[in-house]
Length: 203
Ligand code: GRF
Image (cartoon, rainbow, N blue to C red; front, side, top):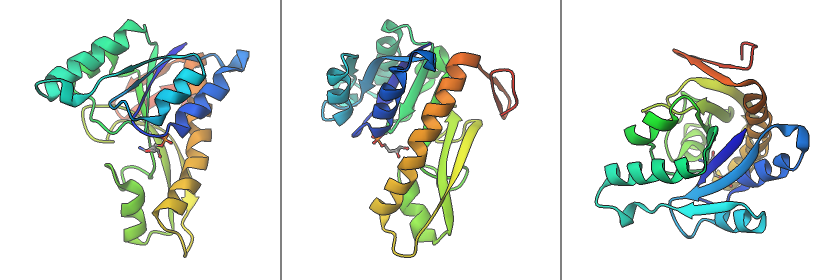
């Protein structure tokens, strides 16, 4: 399956997918990386891996709606079977979801529905939870609200700060992403209400 990865940051999740796609049996390969900023370290990873990339910056467009259309058109160029949002810090709008809804997944560094949004790690820490984690879900029109595909719990240590906790979460997040994107690529993804079913088995 052809994957387009959306990223905004350093791209450690992208790096994990790029490493996995070298394994012939994985069943998916990253055909392009699209970011919302030219500063994303993910762009360097793409270049080093010989993978196409594109930047679709919100400030280049009159409004969010035009940016959303441009993003959808940019991703369409690469004929993605699935889109993976890994550290992409923008909300995917109606034009994008009209084309890629149901086959776009997002990884979030908290156990949704707890701590959605851009500061899930910080919010969990501030709440003093003992366990947090990461979630792979199908993207819908809301913010981190789509049907859940898989989750992993991660313990919070007493001396954790946002950085140490996020790094512990990312270690599990990369494994969750690689495992489930591979399963989706090989077996398909079927969304039925709140159910996100991968392949023939119930997730
Ligand atoms: C990941 O934890 C992702 O879930 C969150 O931001 C982080 C991005 O990390 N939205 P990276 O850019 O993949 O290293």
